[in-house]
Length: 205
Length: 347
Image 1 (cartoon, rainbow over the protein chains, first blue to last red):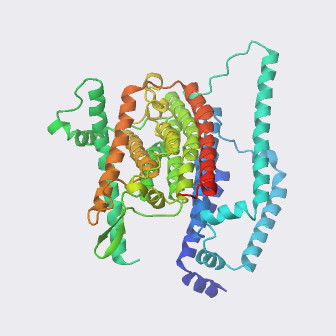
Image 2 (cartoon, each protein chain N blue to C red):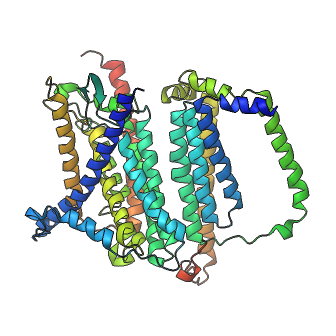
Image 3 (cartoon, each protein chain N blue to C red):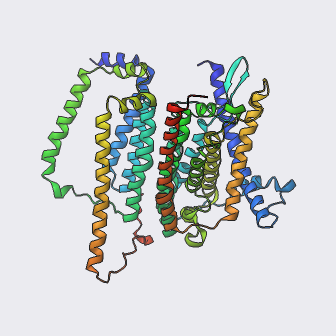
């Protein structure tokens, strides 16, 4: 069993090595995302997760997806996260494990089931399929993705965009309502508290 | 990949790094001289002939200055931030083509480091990563002014990135590719003068250039480092070489932005004389460099001319004018292209 594994590792093709490297970085930084106490550090770890994921997309010959992954997630969404963290001056979480003691009886079995199923899938499917798909064809190019989106998958694509549009309008309506409510109450409001006093700025080494 | 190819690529990378970093150094010199000329002053003219060695003197000064790390900063991020700002700015040059192909050692050598089929997206990805340098610098400095600079910068860059990426869609439709070399090749018609800017894409170019000014934090969009309000903005707490790295990042982004404007809208290395047999590629590179320097001059010219925006004006301008205009222009370009392909097949 162990000899088989060693033999397998020794004869792995180069892309698989890189895949393992980036997968390790991805899983490691993903763990950091949930384990870091400072929210900003979690956000930075999330950037590394996306970068590793994007590298694995490139190994799968999906350059378009890789670039979009960086632009949309690392370049826009996490920037917004960081922006919110900075603006609201979010503090570090204290350890609250004691408050949710019962949770571990639910979480531990669920995680075990999750890992078990992942392991089962990994065992029944073949690892070298990754390399095969990397060798095969240009499924990841802009042209093929665009063609797919506007022919075969047009309906799901349009449905998703309608959904996003609804979310956008909904957010606008909600924000607008809060504003009108505030105007109706017409209490002499205090100006919002200065959130950026230097001593409040979070310092986490 | 043979050994020769490997060496050629390595030489190309080193050459590009050398040229860009030297360019950054002399861009600061050019900026100071041109600004001085605009303001009827002399500018630096003592170190070397015409002050040409001034960047060297500045560099030595930056290296030997004391590198102060304030007590209350988040140390790791504080040190990391200038590097995060500089590295993505330099990485974009990996895909920017400065010329066609030349023949050396029986090899066709493309005058770009690499050519990938999503190079436009690669440039945008690197630009969007550059934000983190500024944001993290603002956060980790543990200072009110730095934090405000970082906040302004992240809001501003995220807002103008939308208009920036939409403004080039017309160009992409013309070229039918996301590969910068193919985009340049698509502009080689009309005796190498079929540049995108001569035609419908002029509006796209205007939107692109304004957004790029905002993305590179240049006047009139330099609110993240507005001296009169924020001391120095996100780099208030930085000194010595770390401060210089932010400077280098900003100037590198300026050169990148000028190169992108050249490639996307001004035909890249295309220009009269490029078709000539042996010297064509060299003339092409000269065209490219001349165009980039022209754009850099415009940058400095704008800095010498315009005052700074107010913050709400900046946001209104980006979201309520540039973004809708960019979307409208995509529709116009697409309609015209469709119309030509349907009815205009006569010529």
